[in-house]
Length: 374
Image 1: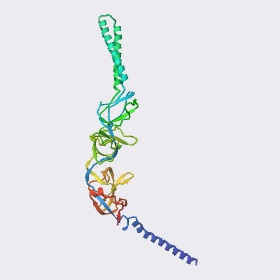
Image 2 (image 1 turned 60 degrees about the vertical axis):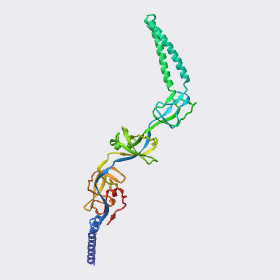
Image 3 (image 1 turned 90 degrees about the vertical axis):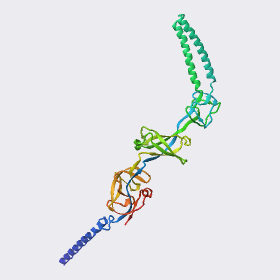
C-alpha cells in the first residue's frame, strides 16, 4: 500500500510540474504581444495624426508689452519768493510760450529798495570820480581812494543781487507747453511750497515701457515701435530714442523710451498703451506649430514622421507668435512635423497621416484634443 501511495504522489507531482510549465510557455507570447512585440500590441496599432511639412518663411520677431505715455517735459510751477499774488497772466488749459509772463508777486518793496540802492550807487560813483582826480594830482593817498572805490563796488553788487531777486517776482514759462489748472488766485499769498499750476510739453510725448532683459542686445536707439492707446482705435508709430544702460535686478527687465511727435496732441500723458517692438525679422525662418513642441527636462522635442513611423528629435526654440514657434536647431526644411496626437506617440509608433497641413492651416487650426488609434 505504501508503494502504491508513493507512485500516486509521484504521478501527481509530475503532472503539476508539467501543467505549470505549459502555462508559463503559453503566457510568454501573450506578454510579448502586450508589450508591443506581437502583432496586436500598441506599437503595431497606427496613430492617426496631422502633419506639417517644414518650409522656410518670413517671421517678424516682435515683443508685445505695455507702457505709459509721459510728457516730453513737465514741471509744477512754484514761486521762488514769498509774497502776495498781484497778477495772473495765463488762461488755464492753454498753450504758453517759453519766457511768457505767467504770474506776478508783489514787488513794491523790492522796487523801493532798488531805487534807494541806485541812488547810493550814483552818490558813490560821483565820489569815486572826484577821488580819482585827487589821487592823480596826489592830493590824497591810494588808501583813501580805495575806500570810496570799494563802496561803489559794494553798492553795484547789492543792486545786481536785488535785481536777481526782483526777477523772481515775475514767473515765466520755462518752455513751450500747455498750462494746467491753477491752484491760486490773485491776492493769494504764495511761498516756495505753494503749488501754482502744472505746465507740460505734450508735443512730442514719450512712450515708456519695459522688455525682458534677454532682449537687451536686440534693441537700440532708432528702432521703430507701434502702439495703441487704451480706448482709441488708431495705431501710432514711434522711434526708440533711449535705452536704460542696465537691467533692473528686481524685475529682470530693461527700460526703453520712444518718442512720438503727437502733433495733434491727441495722445495724453498718463495713458495706458500696448506696445509692439520689432526685433530681428527673418525671411527664411524655420517655423512649426506651437502644439508640436513637447517640453522636456533637458529642453524641447518634436516628433517627425519618417517612413510611416514617429521619430523624436530634440530642438532649440527661438521666438514665438500666438500659433507658431521658431526652431533654431534640430529641424530642417522638408522635415515632416507631427502636429496632433503627440501625447499618444512613442519612438517607432506607426502612423496614419490624416492630413498634411498648409502653413495657413497650421497657424489657424485649433490645437487637436485627441488622437485616433487604429
